[in-house]
Length: 130
Length: 126
Image (cartoon, rainbow over all chains, first blue to last red; front, side, top):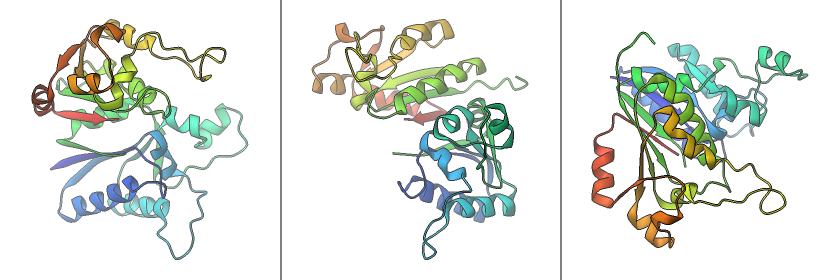
């Protein structure tokens, strides 16, 4: 089956991104397909490479990047939500005259249309949020 | 759009309009999503019913100093988003009636709300 996943909460603050990750892993292990994982609201913070969690804890951001690399996943961060919260890629940083960018490997920034398209193209859109 | 698939999308709004950003960002999805010409419905349950309360005053001088986006619900008609449903019990629990709302809605009881959800292809819950 073809799945899409929506992650609406930030890492560590809320269980949603952990649950979404475990779900994504299980989906792939069962041989299903993931069309896209979309990050919205504080969920965009799953895509910052500047997090430094304690070493004895899970690294949520790296975990996403590794999963994306292994399975060629499309991890999309909502641009409007990302701008509000200070998550930028190189182009966005340049466009807004900011002195740095912080997007993690395997993530890309795009519009909300990508979420709607994921709803249309996949057989199940599973929402993880509060 | 190359695809001709039309799916039933339900935006389920569960939270108060201010105090968290869910309501505003849900509305932003609705507005962008309208361009995809899907079969869209909005439902308001729990504190989400407050999103449609009329006479919201949020300016610095008279309120909490946050942008009032409630007028956007009135503009949804122009985006062909015309199916708005409100949960009856959530309204009653909060002392609201249809006269307190800023747009026309259809009021559903729990069984009807469940049926509405059952009919959907995609439910985005905020």
